[in-house]
Amino acid sequence: MFTLPQGEATAPTACSGSTSSQDMENGYGDVLQGECLRKPDCKQPKLYGVGDPVAMFSSDSSCLSSRGRVIKWFWDSAEEGYRTYHMDEYDEDKNPNGIINLGTSENKLCFDLLSRRLTQNDMLHVEPSLLQYPDWRGHLFLREEVARFLSFYCKSPAPLKPENVVVLNGCASLFSALATVLCEAGEALLIPTPYYGAITQHVYLYGNVRLAYVYLDSKVTGLNTRPFQLTVEKLEMALQGVNSEGVKVKGLILINPQNPLGDIYSPEELQEFLGFAMRHQLHVIMDEVYMLSVFEESLGYRSVLSLERLPDPQRTHVMWATSKDFGMSGLRFGILYTENQHVATAVASLCRYHGLSGLVQHQMAQLLRDHDWISQVYLPENHARLKAAHTYVSEELRTLGIPFVSRGAGFFIWVDLRKYLRKGTFEEEVLLWRQFLDNKVLLSSGKAFECKEPGWFRLVFSDKENRLRLGMQRMRQVLERQSQVVEDTSPCHTQEPSTQPL
Image (cartoon, rainbow, N blue to C red):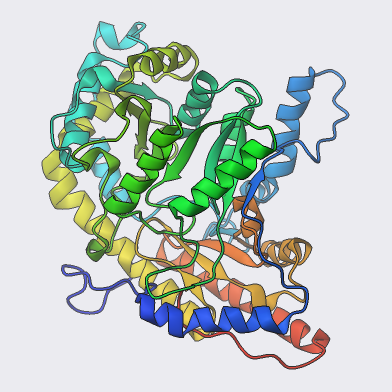
């Protein structure tokens, strides 16, 4: 297990991957501007875009319906790295030359804590009602515990109500259900980029709903700005642009803490974004799946449910799951909290296809009511382990002279590998991604998050020490080789990027 410098486990300081606004402006931001000036083909990034998930669609599956062919195509085209990993998964004893997965956002640091808690006697319970069809919103005993859990850990100003809770088998199902009941086929949901790319499939495959992109970039333009920063001005411009193309936007998706940036929105920013949505009568889908994985206390994370007054509570829908904060991505438990009973009922109707077994619902109720274990055992240790792993990877990146974005939330660091591309294209990004995979380390490329700047990668650090060290070693090998390739093909020597994090 990684160890922290003395004293940091109990008193976290500023995130090792973060920096002040002044540092960003005077350091890396200047380098970005310099690079733009040096390259004659450097263009201002587009401010918005409308996703077309099947633009590259092709299929020879004549036995399937048109919908079936699209669904199969998504699997064939979007899961290459993940499928390759599962066919050659690293195992210290059985397959030491297998693939190290630093691309999938899972917390693998606390299985020891979870296995002890999930095998205690209170988890092992069977009664007739647990083996029968439940209320499709979820058993009342579970929804009551969810409401108490969210009230406590989201610090809501008033107790949250169980009638506003719906439980499903994960946030993927929640995105799919919400898109289906809120949007007509062909309509769109606004989302800032880069974003967790699987949302594209979640909203499209059932509901035929598209995503409208609010493109953000890495430039730091002022003292109080940061890379990939969302503003109301950018939301307004993107909405106007999308509407001008004849696409109707029905909602806004916000991920807080943000994936892949590891960033958070301040309460003031949240109020501004919710106000924007209210002015345009847009639903807001708040994904807070990493809300308990903020390991830098100085960030001061606030859930949207903690706000004293929501501008439009009937159009504000909050989702959370145990997959990230409790390292249970295989258990599949997600919740929706909405005051809009029409939305809750419509989503609950889809729980016929996305519900949980009664036994799992009992286990989740037992886990969520155990505030003593969560607050005194699990969260402190989980945060300490996340911080230690993050510190190790951050220092490795600094040693390599690689800039990155990370503010101390989530399981990932947004890494700038643009200097390792021979040309600033997504084709070059794919080639670098494939070199990593060939060297048995899986990362996620920026294109998968709809990043408009080729060369960014998401690196997941929430893994055991032996796998993380070996993965970083394999990554370093690729970058050292690629650095030589870039140098050999470069027409002239250019200034090296700063080693400061963004």
